[in-house]
Amino acid sequence: MRPSDLAFFNDVRAASELGTPRTSRILLASVIALMAAGLIWAHFAELDEVKRGNGRVVPSRQTQLLQSLEGGIVREILVHEGAIVKQGQILMKIDDTRFAAELGEVRERRAAIAARVARLEAEVQGRSQPEFAEELAGIAPQAVETERNVFDARQNKLERDIDVLVQQQTRLAESFKLVARQVELTRDLYVKKIVPEIEMLQIDQKVAETKGQLAEVQSRIDNVRAAYRSQAEEDLAKSRGDLAVFDQTIKTAQDRVRRAELRAPVNGIVNKLNVTTVGAVIPPGGNMKLIVPVFVVVGNAGWPACVPGGSPLRGPSPDSNTVVAGPPAGGTVMVGVANTAF
Image 1 (cartoon, rainbow, N blue to C red):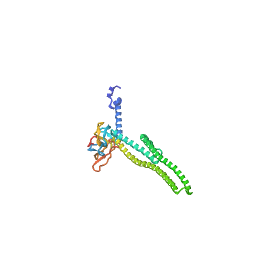
Image 2 (image 1 turned 90 degrees about the horizontal axis):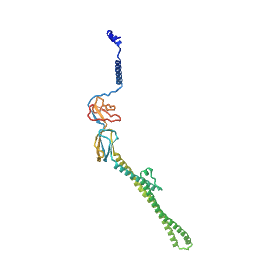
Image 3 (image 1 turned 45 degrees about the vertical axis):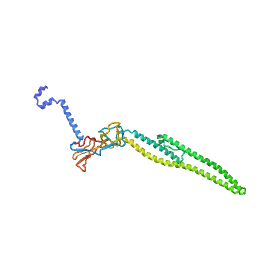
Image 4 (image 1 turned 180 degrees about the vertical axis):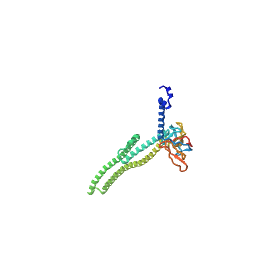
């Protein structure tokens, strides 16, 4: 059939004879598919409702001012103005050389006192050698060695003092044996009336004197040992008190070192940075950062107050016709200006 013959057909017959072009069918199918996809998306997708109204942004807590108690030289600045920070995050580091040196000195002195306490406990308990903890020997080997030498020196002195008295006691014991034998022989002669009574009395007096000397030497030996232990107990009590003081001093020194790292007290935004130069000197109590805590959004009732990334908490404010939204769980919210229009 020639195209000129279609002029003699009616419209329906001509259309059936001519057929539908391929491009038209593709276009129609595409339109139908797009409409179907739009209907499916509209069914499952959730759209945020956007309305405008007057509102304001207020911090959930008072603005936090970050200060340094001791001051010092700025070693490192880890944040900038406008940065979002989390609670406990390190914001700035101050040179802790002086604080670390003080802490090390206190630890050394504490270790020396602990070694002294171990040595004095051995002296009080009468042990032959002091016992030092392995940790203490690793931390302060010099202090441990010093106290061990002191222990040996004091033990040697005690032994020398007692040895002198023991030798004296030995001589008196030998003398007493001779005097006792002399008394035994003299008494037999005295019974037989061979020696006078005055001689017998003199020998008895000599025996009594020798016994007294022996008792005195033994008492001096006991006194030397008692004095040694008493002095050790007195020093031990004082050293234990000093050890407790150093334990608290170490905590203070550790706190100074810890405060050399300035951390964020709350989740929030660094609003102002007063110190921006590494190496700057911060005076004690100097203000360095101003942190705005995570905020809440307050808006007019009748529209949903939204927090980006979180679900709004709806509820009327007790003193005004407002709706308050809390911050998103586990996140922070950044805001540029207050009195923001929603």
